[in-house]
Image (cartoon, rainbow, N blue to C red; front, side, top):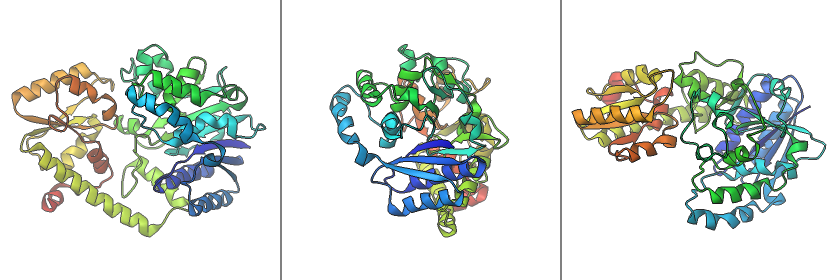
Length: 414
């Protein structure tokens, strides 16, 4: 029996659907029996609970529900630290579900000794038995380092917990896929409270539960191959030919699947359509809404640039889409911000931006899923947000999802 855990906080019903799609992909590709351990709160509706049960029965597997609201007063635990944290500048941008994995040692039965934890925005496009058979580190944890996920060859300056020396850059892992020895994990009963205290003392650490886990476990955990946590946006940047046998992570809200011809969106859509959440009418409506969203985003961009030259900035793999769909900006140019082996250089980007701005009035539109993580460097370099530069991530996702009509169709619409 393989034990897999998910955590769910679902204010609007979207994450139940996403979690169900992930579980469906796991069941569809795994031969062994699987028990799902779903950590949830009062936001799980009776209808969605029944769908999870139906899905498990469909694949002759098992699911166990753990109501975290009944087991813990997590709000009270967190609120003890909120006042102090906010005074020190901690943003506290997190989902309650992200904290549930820090309480696993108190929730799961003692006769469960090994566990896989998965984020809801995961598609398991392989047999999960492969991950289950991997070894963990001496501290009972195995995960994929972000250095491999993003194909970095040098330090990522956006990880403050690494810059301050608490975690070695090459050992900083992503917490969306974890393999745990629960007998060892249970030796950290105060992980949540100790972790929150650590964040209060370091308010610039923005990855919340992931920074906590790295602070505690990174030194002696086992680092896994990237096939166990492959970021979809990274594969899109690198121009990957399509999905292979791997665990795909649709992180940073990168899970649009409505009407897209993108291989990874189609993969997500495939498993969604196999799940009890699929409704063909709702699916068609969502695709149409995505089209309207793309048109609206593009119209907003036209108003925002106010006649200036537009420089679209991103990875070279989106250049054909920009050329195809954004002919309404005749003076626009494209700036590849990952010119050499996908290595990103802030200094070089700022030099290029200043040179282009000196030539003529320019608005830079950044089409990069990780833009928010490094955009502060642009401000520090003297560029004004929402005027000198615009976050075009939503527009990029709409373009990739075929949400904007091409060429003349877009001109006619606007």
